[in-house]
Image (cartoon, rainbow, N blue to C red; front, side, top):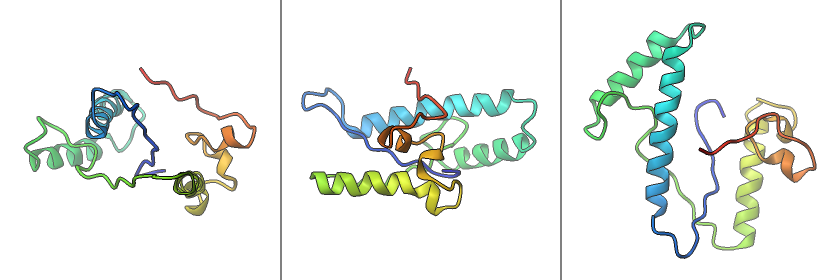
Amino acid sequence: MTNHVHLIVSLSENASHTLSDVMRDMKKFTAMHLIKSIKENPQESRKGWMMSMFEKAGRQNSNNTVYQFWQQDNHPVQLKDENRFSRALEYIHNNPLASGIVRRAEDFPWSSAADYCGGKRAVDVVIY
């Protein structure tokens, strides 16, 4: 999506961290890398505007040192059974389609929808 992310996240039963820890670390990691990419991209015409917006938001939040990239809140939904999981996965896969970004859910390059219909994703997700 152009302005938000949908994720299905699970932790093993014996995990030493919480879902809040995972979300915090994911936001921190991605924010640092995305801000660096924006700063270092000479072709990004909106760089000055974006960086000033991130900096302004960062000044308004005592949790940050300079920039605020992600919103502070999340909207978690616990997927207690297979039916809820399936509905959430379908919603996530169809979100780019419903937004008019793609004509088929599996064509959105950052989605796992292609994995579920026998296709191949345009972008491989790499976790460091």
